[in-house]
Amino acid sequence: MIGTTELIIILLIVLVIFGAGKLKNIGGDLGSAIKSFKEGISDKGEPKKNKKQKTKKQTK
Image (cartoon, rainbow, N blue to C red; front, side, top):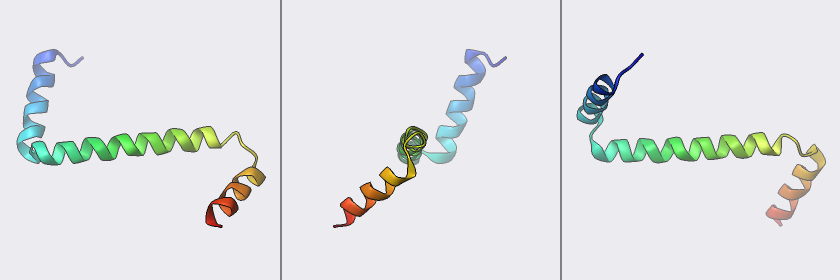
């Protein structure tokens, strides 16, 4: 099991490799990916006809 000391060392190494600005972008991208994944799962329960109607309304 990873302890707090090991976790801090790993985070410092990642910070040195990627830099603070890049980590911010990676975090934002990861958050948006998780959000779209959750939306995709919740849309799975809807019938396909409703999805097609929604896309037709949005394109008009």
